[in-house]
Image (cartoon, rainbow over all chains, first blue to last red; front, side):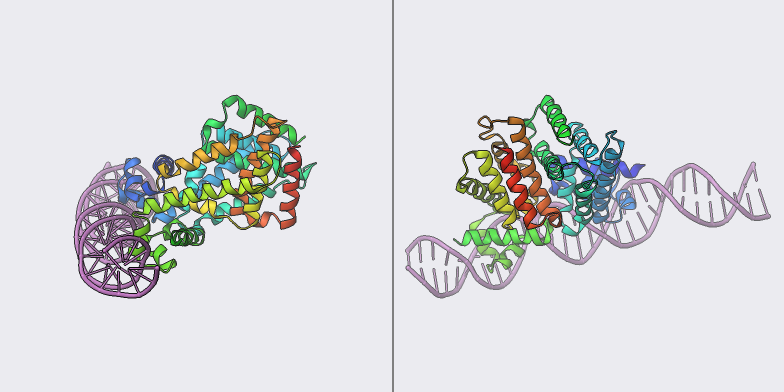
Length: 167
Length: 167
DNA sequence: CCTACTGTACCGTCCGGACGGTACAGTGAG
DNA sequence: CTCACTGTACCGTCCGGACGGTACAGTAGG
């Protein structure tokens, strides 16, 4: 699908040069496509950003589902580390892209609420489970903005520790 | 200081209508000032955003220093909850404003690293201390994007719990 | 007389979006 | 086999508008 390559190009621009660089012309050039070609797939800039948000949510849901633990909470932790350590840090970038118009963030807000509530009743210690999920959120922030804070080994230790907190 | 009112106006626009609404004309109008008057204080849009970032960092540092606990970690937790529960959620908005150019975020990245490392050696259980700080980061995210997740009482419980984790 | 503005008029640039046209790979009728 | 037609995937150009920034004349307060 050429569509995905266009979304990739948009994400790259966002992560590398910020929202100011996210123009239709720049995305098109990055993807090796003309501006007209880009607008064929996404008939407005808003549609492009919306698609980025939707793909982001779908990808993470898929990642959670792929983990093989025995609770949603643990799968969520594992998916977070898989994404963060795998260098898939586009989340922040995509979100800033959508920050131009708060309405575009609505699907993400909804997803965030879902990620936070799902399977919480099944947890043995709800308070600890919440702390773990909050820590996962925080991890995104740190990995994106202050990656020097943790080494790969520390990430592994942290993951193990968070998973053990859910036992 | 009139300068602060201008920064307030810019933050309001950012939180309410997103980065797309942050134009010099709009900020001036919101603050009841002419565009010329705004440019008298901040001679470019970049300078305005930079000032917002700097004020954000300085304010949070002050808030941490105002807390009366016996460790930096606890003061950090208390300051986070004070800011989040007090409705001071401009952090996210300000950051998106600066996301137009990643270079503007450098001071914030530095502050984030500092907030994360300061007093970590003095903690009895470093791993737990890190989890607590990560959870604080996550709290910003949740409070900003999914405020319905927690009631005021849950915030209080969560704060008490995080503080107790540092004992 | 200086500081802190106001107000207006304006410029150059950039950006989103619209539009018309092109190439080409099917596909189904006869 | 072929001709007509359809849908997909683009290209190149153009325009209106918004935005950042400049310039400058004026003014009210201390």
